[in-house]
Length: 531
Image 1 (cartoon, rainbow, N blue to C red):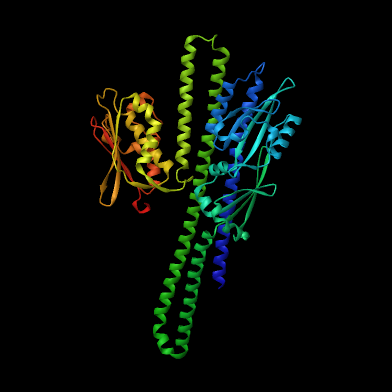
Image 2 (tube, rainbow, N blue to C red; image 1 turned 30 degrees about the horizontal axis):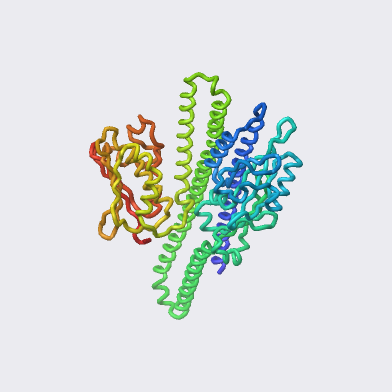
């Protein structure tokens, strides 16, 4: 019993350490992400009043607002409010119908009082978190735009709490922990509301609290391990207890036989001592291996966490200079368009294309890191619907190259995340369009499937330039492109890597069959058991 209690104590310590590490990781992510987003909006406010005189045009506003909105998920909307409190410029309008053609005085009391504070103090202010529509919890931020002591209006940013948490929480953390976020004692976030009973009967003795601070906000976070972590350890404890009881029974029987049949014990003593020695050696070896395994797992977890945090931070930090460069290109064109030589426009185009490619590369890196970490609900849906969704995005490129696309009839139903599967087809179609060949007299792409036993094998086939055998394995790796793509400067080298990661996340496989000059066929499968 004493050994069993020690084992339980050891397990509880491990759970507590894991809970503390996860809480600290979430705190760092939320604080870092929100500080970067608020800083991006503050940059727009500074650019507004930096000019002399301030003449921030509607076109420039939508250019800056659109860039920030694309690169910083979690921002619900960006708008400019005139000095009288009327919402004038709103991006995107479809996300914010509740403020179109409205005055701040018509909104919720919390928003009105925050706006009045900003109007009075001429300082940055944030509203309390509140429900704006369909159960979405958001908060408003206001930047007074003051030039030479005169108010030019207000920059407004709206942040959605659910989107912020979706970006910050990893898959493993969501699976293993119940997370609550409070603001001034009011619950503003709870992961997986369908498991509400786990919060009401959770393991409060393992609860960890953290205070999350970023400009204008102080949140309290409560994190508790889910019951699944305890079920695993309870099974181990019962097995350990059963083992200890069994040993005790064996020793009792041996002792009884020792008293009853001394002669038999003497004959069997050497054999028993040998068995005990071997068992002790085995137990010592098992304990040593267990310690080595724990040390190795701890180091691996630390390295994975460090790598994930690095990729997350560096990808978001790189967006700020890209947004700044893109914004200043627009400012230069608007301010000095007539004074610059004709060659300057071509330089601007080169810079714009470079920032777009860098933005695409960063977005692809973030998307690659989120596969398997941020998941949508899986569902059964026709594969034809997935193909048509992907075709809509690539229709201009297909028509520009005069490509004939043939889609097989009666495609089967598949099971998975629609957004991710559309991503696979988009990347494979984009790859086929890219290598269809400039002098191809009748460019064609075929999409369909074939039966391989009980398994459906899907394919995307083209009659393009094909792929040499030496490149057919490495093209599925990150940053690997064919020589033709490198010369043309096309793609990021991540598309096929994303497709591979999505297929593996759906427990499938992907491969290519190709001959130079005879086109390529990309095959992939999905887990049939989930259909």
